Length: 409
Image (cartoon, rainbow, N blue to C red; front, side, top):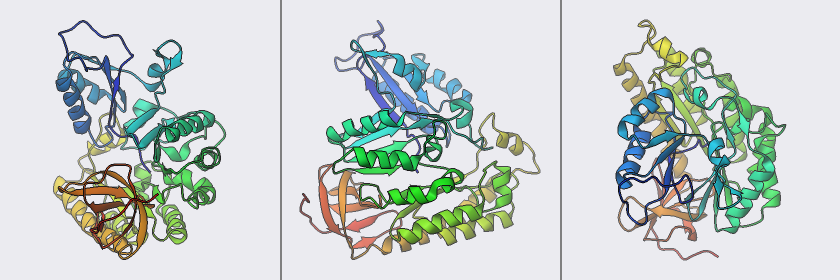
């Protein structure tokens, strides 16, 4: 399930423009950067440099996951940067009386991103996000439903529900992600699809039946992102992950059984301090048994201030970089074979898609089907166009349809 991504929001109302050097007439009054540093600071710093260079002199406000080491690097990029939070942004006034909907972003005119919660109920040893975001804080379901309703009315065909850990949404206010999703489906009519964000397995297991029922509705992408991180229960315990490999197997087995062409997404870390070859083989076996179509494979890097960073400092636990690279290569090779086989099941099938963006190659476009699989199409097709296509080929990371299509009503 998906977590909050790096995003750039151009604010026209807040805070007041500073009296620095003259800027272009279309420059914003302020820029908000919603950053993610879960895999390191490089991507967020690149985003900050881009914004600073494009609009020199414009105040920059950073929210999202901004741990201490990132803040220290950010102020070296520009002295125009300030650090804030969604709560502080929400307290600002837009116009005369309307509060800013700080937990809503637009990925495009057709994609609405709604942050349903902040924080989490875990303290994973490798993660610095919980040090910044703190404990779970869920947004009111009624407000989320209204936000989705407005986004759909404004032309959004895709609604992404996001958060640090969507699976524990509502645990602090007496509800859960399945109940929220059903409420949206009941109260928001229209031709749109919901993509559920990332959720930790231990929380999903508590209401898996109700959540799987949500996927029966055609307005929910058959896509589930549950990061397992390791196939070794010994390493999961060291990571302070409070689920077991067997629990992940049961959850994903039920999902795959009920929705054979669905997209299962997970995350795996290799080279965590103390990981043995036996531990790694358990991870490899879990990958081969659960057969995800999307897998984020990360070589362990210690984040300052985390428990795992202290483990990494122990030479007896530290995994050499050469071993990390070798294991990640083996894992990637096995995963890509599985992903190609999963995608090959779509060849010859007809499916409905929505065009998302131009393709990497000239004269192509990328669309998404009902399982949120990327589909490469022939032609420069406008984003938001709905088509019915036949899949003609498949690669590890995309389906392919190299025939001309007509728009679907």
